[in-house]
Length: 407
Image 1 (spheres, rainbow, N blue to C red):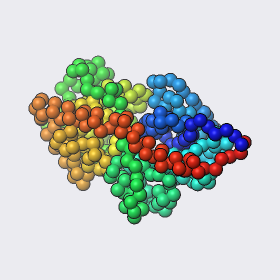
Image 2 (tube, rainbow, N blue to C red; image 1 turned 120 degrees about the vertical axis):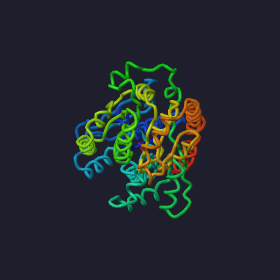
Image 3 (tube, rainbow, N blue to C red; image 1 turned 135 degrees about the horizontal axis):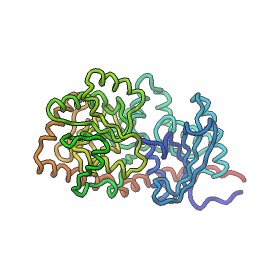
Image 4 (cartoon, rainbow, N blue to C red; image 1 turned 30 degrees about the vertical axis):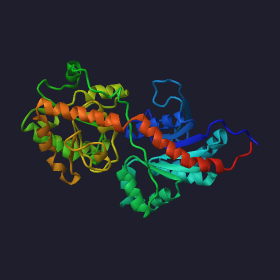
């Protein structure tokens, strides 16, 4: 019989993980590191298109500036066919399990990571936990989503966690019972994302092509329909009828949305020229620097979980105008720490922007201060650690009961 490991070993399966972009990748890295700080050894299996299909690459880092420091990352090349990818993933997970003797499995996002986590955990007699982030539940519960796979995953997971109480209510609704979902909210680094020192970054404005008199309407993340792309374009047009403004996309535009932008440019070429896209920013410090340029941060999501971009903007002391989708109202108190628009009335976004831009300095400063304080009070590491301990304690019974393996 092999000796038991000194620490329990968590296998996290994540569709995206740094250096991948996006909120899911960032939250997976943050969660993996937080779990490791709670005494678990953490191994992450993440899929990638940057490797040859079926190729496995293992990366270990001890760089304290790396968001995944102390976590072992296994990156697996995807096949063109998703069925082949999932079948091969099972083979790889079995091999990794023999190497590292996993104690429990974490699926970050319901599908495909959460589903694969539960399938693998069940096949090995391990406990499993699934982390629902927002869009995963919304996509799978309506056609053409796979409702049966969604319900099976939620039912069979040992523990389900969600990024917001709104999402937890949806899980209970789908399961038809109180499921004791653990709410683990997104948290951010409030030392990195903080108000500027009153210095106007004219060099960056010039580099981006922002005119001196323009108001900067900011959006952070991957711009796509889910995030309210049509409403952002309409609002930019409406604001420019009253005052010069640009839309600064701190991130990228999803490739499938390029046609939408091209159609907008054909109809409104002058205004379309004021859409400035930074492209991929490797460092979070660069994201924070770009957010400092914005006069207002916009997040008119049609549906969402609890976006990091909102918390980052609020932590920078920026006024955020967002929809009331998902868990967003759990961060923004309307009229106090930002502004909410009903997701059915997002056509009013332009008017709301103009109202905020016309506010006097005292009003803006009051909301700016309240926004940052809201994040500092409610979305910090201690809250995350407390909720993660709850998840891990529930898994501990499964860890104790899991069958030991022979050498």
